[in-house]
Every structure is written in C-alpha cells, then in structure tokens.
Image 1 (spheres, helix red, strand yellow):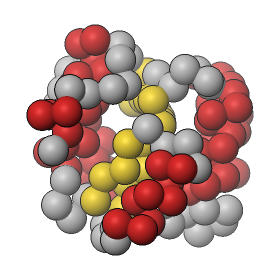
Image 2 (cartoon, one colour; image 1 turned 45 degrees about the horizontal axis):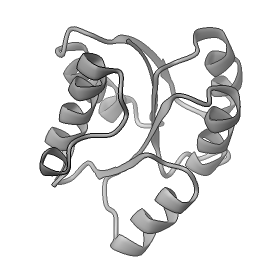
Image 3 (tube, helix red, strand yellow; image 1 turned 30 degrees about the vertical axis):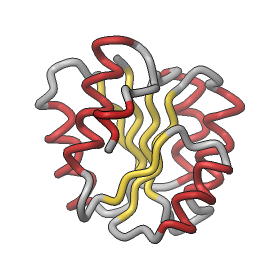
Length: 130
C-alpha cells in the first residue's frame, strides 16, 4: 500500500516512518513541506496520506485539499502532537477521514494503517477507533 507521510520534524518523521515500516505492508514516501507534496501525490497516487496539522509553509489544510482533489480515493489522516476537540472537528469537516493526537493515539494511527492494508478501506470498525 502506498503511503505519503508529510511531517516537518525530522525526528518525528523518522520515528513515524519506522513505526509504519514495521507494519510490513507500506510503501512509504516522505515529505517535510507542502512544496514537495503536489508532485508526489500525482506521481505516486497514495492510498493513505498522513499530514501534520502544523506544516510551516502552507499548513496541513493545503495538503489535505490537494490530496482530496488529486487522489480522491485516498484515506486522508491529520496528525498533531496536541489536539483539542474543536480542532479535530474542524479537520474532519475540512475533509480528513481521521484525526489522531500523536501524544496519545499513535497506537490508533497504526491500527488504522494496518486496517487499511488488510481491507483497503479507510473506515475502521467503531470499536477499533475508540
């Protein structure tokens, strides 16, 4: 499964990449900024796009909107190190399929990717997402 990870922090990106690679079902492409993403989305047509909410150059919203336009069937995931509920709702309304707080929900992020690998479905059973 093709996955695009967009994370500006090299340390966090490497950590997330290692965890995602350990699942054994992901062909991972990484980017640090929005300027890198537009051509990557078109070139690789990822099934999953994981984007940090706080990208420095255009913000995660730009990546989310580009991915939704250029790769309509992709599962779009927004992550951040700290999320309050109003922000989570805002990202979901903007088109994200999932929003995960990396300070407490890394295991849920990995479950979602594992589920996507097995089923090729972005939705997870309710009991897995709680």
